[in-house]
Length: 99
Picture 1 (cartoon, rainbow, N blue to C red):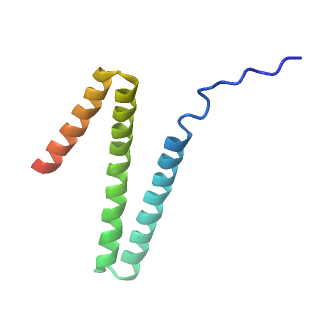
Picture 2 (cartoon, rainbow, N blue to C red):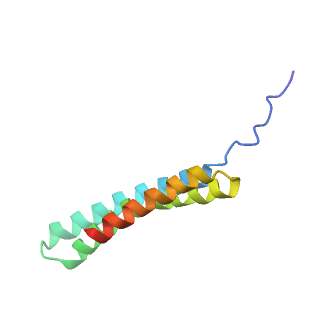
């Protein structure tokens, strides 16, 4: 009886998946806390700050993933995909500056 072969690539994206999972939980918690604060005191600045923090996490985490993939592609020698990742980050940065 042979054991199944070990895949050397297994688990290579576990850290990225965990980061996305933690970020999703953080967004839900921040939104819930913002709603609770606004329910108790509608004019509370803390509720607005919690909502903005949720939006910031929701926007920054995918950008970090794109940056991580760009660095990974550059290390592996795939310059085309690294340039595409850089282009995506530049388009988002330009949009943020123009907003």
